[in-house]
Amino acid sequence: MTGTTTEKKTGPYSTHSVDNQPPPFEDVNLFATDAALRDAVNREGAGQAARRINAFGLVAGSAEAFALGRLANAHPPVLETHDAQGRRRDEVLYHPAYHQLMATSFSEELNRSVWMHLSAPHAAPPAGVHVMRAAAFYMAAQMETGHCCPVTMTSAAVPSLMLEPRLAEIWLPKILSRTYDPQFGPIGEKASATIGMGMTEKQGGTDVRAGTTVASPVDGGGPGGEYVLVGHKWFMSAPMSDAFLVLAQAPGGLTCFLLPRFLPDDTVNAIRFQRLKSKLGNRSNASSEVEFWGAHAWAIGAEGQGVQAIIEMVTHTRLDCAVASSGLMRLSLAHAIHHAEHRMVFGKSLISQPVMQQVLADLALDVEAATALSFRLARSFDRADDPSAAAWRRLMTPVTKYWTCKIAPGFVAEAMECLGGNGYVEESPLARIYREVPVNSIWEGSGNVMALDVLRVLQREPDVAGQVVDELADAAGEDALLRAGVERLQAILHEPRMLDFRARELVEGLALVASATILRVHAPAAIADAFIATRLGGLSRQTYGVGLDRADTRAILVRASPNRQ
Image (cartoon, rainbow, N blue to C red; front, side, top):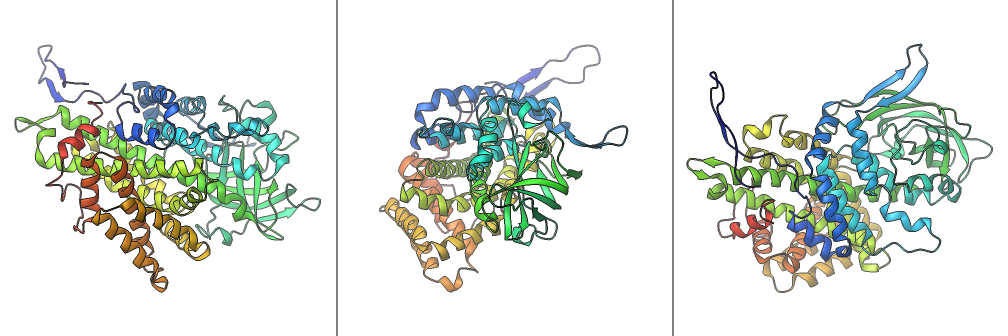
């Protein structure tokens, strides 16, 4: 994509020509034009899937896909609680564009790819399958983010469902389907299933153990047994899912349940939607307030073990939050660079202005780091049987989710500013992305929850943190700034009485040092040198574009440009 879009004057009343405007950023291969993503896929073990990932890059970056994303958000879902005669319906209606996006992601197997080995006895997952899926999810989020919510929850629910073989036997074949089926009907009549999740209540929020929803056993209850639920959930996204994993108070304590929309006799379960949330962003995806009026559900795991049963689902969704945030930062950067490469200001191209180069290069460094860190985390999911990978997964899941999701809102704001007024209007995707990105730092645990999770690891599994920090120390090599960063982490860890007060400092430090070590070993020197100098060099920074006066900004931007790959 070169040149600018020009519209000549025509007709007797034409007032001006439209020129010095960039061409639309569409019909772009989101994989082929993203060097950081390509490198991460090859480095972290999914290089054998590059051809498939490349094909999806064309789909996700097409003009049609971006148009579907605009439509799905311009026409948000609508709740119909009753029909014309006053009978309960409790259905949410979506724009056709939303269903097309869902079908696209199902076709790419984002709902099932990491679990397909479960359909064959004694089969092992393919090498690098989590990294392969992460690459596709990274691009699906750029295509449109709201629909990714039910996609990620459906995939993430599988480990919890596998705890109850009788339930898995019914539901797993539908979850592992590649055919998206949006109809509202009994599971036996559907080609596929989507799974949602409901944990948050009005009085508890993050404190899920404070939930008041009551689960009463039917015929004794127990693992896999039937219960009747009475209570509510304050946030339950993707309400047209075929079933939900929810937490409720059974006689033995907080328990995880599978709550289907339809009962075994094909009647509708007593799940009553009260209203849909009016959200800042994520508008294509419905989030509901719901009450359970004697709804039937089946226990996953023993009573009192609800958090343990659902935590693996939460862990997988946190990975997807980090990957999606990285993808949205990449798309924002691509739009900013694309604009700057096609825009003339004061007689010079915008991309040639030193101050703009500094800002764009600085943004590119965070995309490189977030992508590297997220895909390193995905690799640890692929190698969970390896003790060092398991340690990385346990500690660095909350760290990666914290940092990538936390920096994204400010990042997108800066990228939007690069487009000026063109970035601030609704015709620009930057406006939607700006509203979208904060949700990932809230969903599946806010920043403080991630920090507390890291402290929990230190308290309960101290060897895990030691393994990760030792790995970072080895990777730092002779780099003085990297070694100093590792030493700061070690100093914080050696003052356990102060950890509650330095939790965020520790988590951010882990993210920065881990990202920097990956970049030092694997990224071009211009990237690694600039990231380490600006993020670990002690420079006081409040905004982008500061401290890169000695960086090779041209090399950084050539690598980051979506038009020069």
